[in-house]
Length: 164
Image 1 (cartoon, helix red, strand yellow):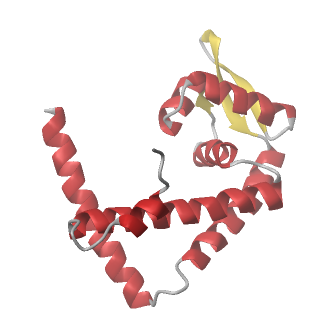
Image 2 (tube, one colour):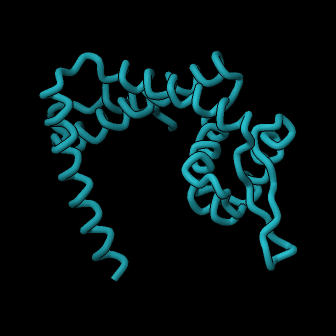
């Protein structure tokens, strides 16, 4: 059975732990926002979230990144990065640059067109995210941010203990 988080949230009743219901709510919210972002990128920019994410990594590193670094940062296989990179090169949004001292390696960097295009997409992306939280007051936003920060810190502690 492959229930969506929205279905799982609807099925989580009072007999389930409050923490489980909260987790399902967070997952549902995340997926609903991501769905909106994916649709917006497709409709307004004829692109995908993975392409946007790759360009976002390159925007943070104007000197470019090696393919293995991109793969690591995006947490996807090298093959996925290569396919996306090939598409973006063909569209003139990124370029492959030689790496000094390593003839087998190259860096990928945004072109001028890529920087301009990404800046436009990033502005719209931010607007979609702001819109997603429009129902919350500044105080609500601050409280939610602090509370989720506590959850994050606790998870980082747990993960660190597991890795030791």
